[in-house]
Amino acid sequence: MRLATFNIESLGGDRRTGAPIEDRIAVLRPQLERLRAEVLCLQEINTRKAGGTRQPADLKRLLAGTPYAEHALEIAARPGGDTPADVHNPAILTRLPVVEREDIHQRLVAPPSWQNTTAIPPGEAPQPMTWDRPIQRLALALPDGRHLHVFNVHLRAPLAAPIAGQKDAPFVWKSVAGWAEGYFVSAMKRSGQALELRLAAERVFDADPDALIAVCGDFNAEDHDTALRLACAGEDDTGSGRLAGRVLTPVERSLPADRRYTVVHHGRPQMPDHILASRALFGRLASVEIHNEMLEDELVAFGRIDRPPESLHAPMVAEFAI
Image (cartoon, rainbow, N blue to C red; front, side, top):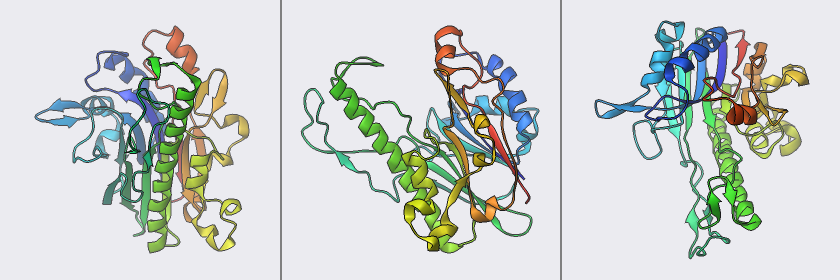
């Protein structure tokens, strides 16, 4: 069974900017076909209105004529609603039957409150700190009767959150203090999402200590960063061998260090995308691939390439003996 994750970067929707969808399909379709995934977790799927509801029309165009056209498509609902958001939705394509589905958005972790200290004018009262996107969970039926629990995540990017009155332009801050507070708020949101993910995984472990769990997606965090430590819950963090069965492990650790990257940022290879596996699932790991051979530096691409059609994230796939 091949399980993959891919931040496909703002595919489709009503946007008038970016590469034409035909150009994107020409580049992205071979990448998807190379994955040969029975289960594919996607991030940043955009939708457009069709018949009164929002539909991932361009994703369906991309999948047409590929084996994925026969997969079931599950797309998460926007927070507080029952239909997808306009941009940046998580979605899962699966050949395995879906037996449970759940979108988790601040149901396990209440929004923390924060009162901005550098805002202009200053904040008058604490405000709830909400996450941008839900966590998507599916339970999939395996041929042996067991369930594979798949989480699809896209955590907050490490860009400073807006602070009222503290910006001259979208990426230009008026003060270091304003930027620092915005960066802190962003980090808090990312950590909060990771905490909610961990609590959701704990519920699965409570029901089955030997659960087959895979957490896939764009964590916007590298191995050993705070968000990954929260999600993985390593023994060196909990200090308890009794909890070892609940560890989630990044499958890319099975690759040589120089192959572990899904993004190149300013010349530096980075690994913000991950597949984490429970011990029971990791024991069935057969191989891991990161398809980063044609990856562009994201800063160079934005500055020098006119409307790049590719994603600036590399897809990754893990094969399990299931």
